[in-house]
Length: 168
Image 1 (cartoon, helix red, strand yellow):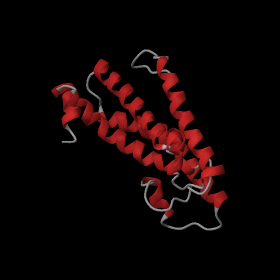
Image 2 (tube, one colour):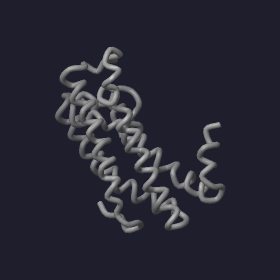
Image 3 (cartoon, helix red, strand yellow):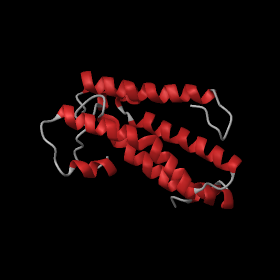
Image 4 (spheres, helix red, strand yellow):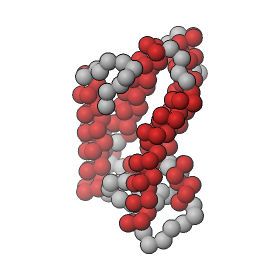
C-alpha cells in the first residue's frame, strides 16, 4: 500500500518478503514436522524453527517506516493516528475472530471476548487453526501503535540516543 506521507521505498519489499517467508516457513515446519516443540538439534535452521525472528523484522520495518514518516511530517496527532490504526486492524481481526470461533468450536465462552482485546493472553480461541493461529500478534502490534507516537516525539526532541538509553 502506498503511503501519502513518504515516497515508496522498494528495497523494503525485499525485507518484507524475507520476514513473511521466515514466518511462513516456521508455521509450515511446525505444523507438519516440528509439532510445536523446541528443536535444539536444528540450531542451524534457527530462522525456520524460531518464528520470532520474522515477527521482529516486521516490527523493525514498522518502526522504521513510522519514524521516517514522523521525521518528515512533524508531530503525530495521537487521536487521528490511533483511529487510523484501529480502522486498519480491527475490522479484519473481528471477522477472522468470529469466523474461527464459529467454525472451530461448538461452544462460545464468555472469556473469548477478552481475547479480542488481549489476544496474546491465555489459550486463544483462534490458536487451534493454521490460518488464524497468528492472531496473537494483533494486540502486540496495537500496543506498539499506542506507544510509538510518544517514542517518536521524545526521539525528535532528544535525539536518537534517547531510544538507546530507554531500556537502561
